[in-house]
Image 1: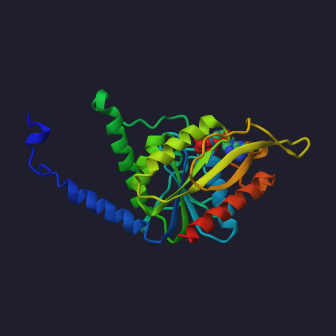
Image 2: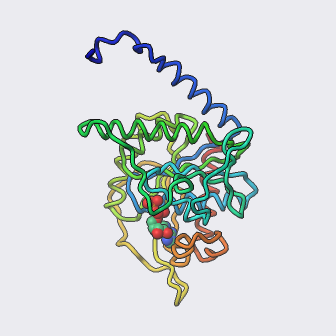
Image 3: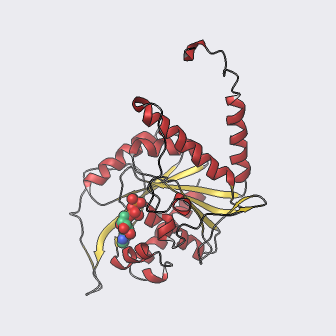
Length: 289
Ligand code: ADP
């Protein structure tokens, strides 16, 4: 059997040609997208998916056309949060028809294709290299989703990133300089510490990091209506990027996300004006570039 180093060029696979063809299919599919904003963190469970959807609603309310790509292939949340469930997109003349929420937000998520009772399993040929192999397959699937959907003209394509500081950087590099990043943290040193790693890694990526959002900054008390402390205030960790705003934890919002209820009607508490202000800060930062 030939070793890797015995193969001349691409070994006849025309892999470079295939990669270029795919890149141009992705570029053609995204030609109508004005702004791409990826919402990441590094840390899991900090509210990336929740804020992505809430920001989409805020931008939509201001008249923008918005879609969400749920790039968390193995832990997709957007199908449930939007209430779309597992209704697989259908083919149309220009690719898969973009599924939309009642508010008109386009949503593409593995949760539309794979029901929650099933795990997405990337088969692995070699246990030792399984991470590399899996990551390669993940990006192949992401590329197919980007190239295969009729995104149409969009003011904003928001990308809900998976957790992991290193993966945040890999995904940012995959989406390229056209995608700006917003990072989500909790107001705890534990969370900020991980986000600081993402910020450090992103320095070598071509993407603009617009800033960070502090999520769950305080708890909206349904009894007295006030916002009370949730985490001990910190922090010695300066992320070195602008703060785009803070959003409190609103139990009504968490419940609405679980039920996949249309937002923001269910989230009329203090979290909603905070999200709107973050959306305005993101718009401002993008326009300043
Ligand atoms: P991530 O995408 O970072 O893993 P999620 O968006 O899935 O995090 O949020 C984790 C949980 O916290 C979810 O149950 C979500 O509904 C809830 N949540 C996140 N942010 C808020 C918030 N500001 N108010 C209420 N619930 C929130």
